[in-house]
Image (cartoon, rainbow, N blue to C red):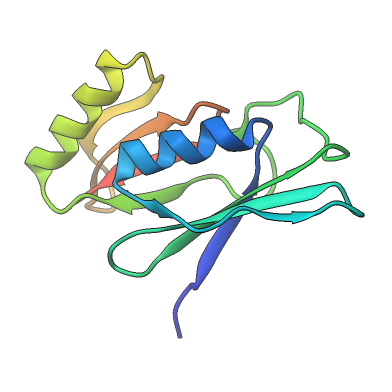
Amino acid sequence: MKIEHLAMWVNDLEEMKNWYCHSFSMTSGEKYQNHAKGFSSYFLSFASGSRIELMKRSDVQESPQPRGMVSGLAHFAISVGSKEKVLMKTEEFREEGIKIIGEPRTTGDGYFESVIEDLEGNWIEITI
């Protein structure tokens, strides 16, 4: 078994699609729209085949708490392949003005990672 994809609600579908594609070298499928439900989405793919689905619907509510600190999905991790790439990617995000939640470090469970927020506050671990 494997996780086929993860999905997240977003406020600005086009901006988030563009950011993920640019930031993580993902490719986007065609935009899906269901006008009757006011729903639209994109599937974004990594070269490995893993996917993220970005979804937009006008009746989805925003939480008043930071996204990484509410019940449900706390974060997801994207492996960039090496410690050097974690450091490099973290600095790229810093230069772009992306919020760094956790500086690069080796965690107690042995991961080397940093943690960032995407444009809408979702927490992403950048790992080896």
